[in-house]
Image (tube, rainbow, N blue to C red; front, side, top):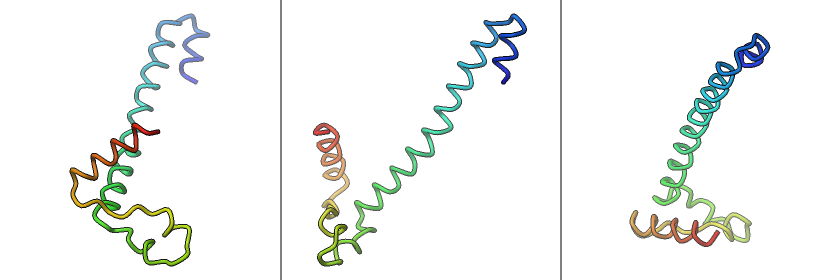
Length: 86
């Protein structure tokens, strides 16, 4: 509402600055937690924390679960390969 009020008050430059500032803060506020959650989940998957899915026979999870990597360097390499293939 603040940018709209500023624009109606004849202060378009302040309104633009306010919109730009809030957009930048929003990206930071949303991107950092999402990146952290994804990194933690990926790390857990690579140390074998989700191996229960592999023990379920004839399940969708067992068929689509990737076994953990041998090392962190091979896990990062496999991740990069998967991202390039997308």
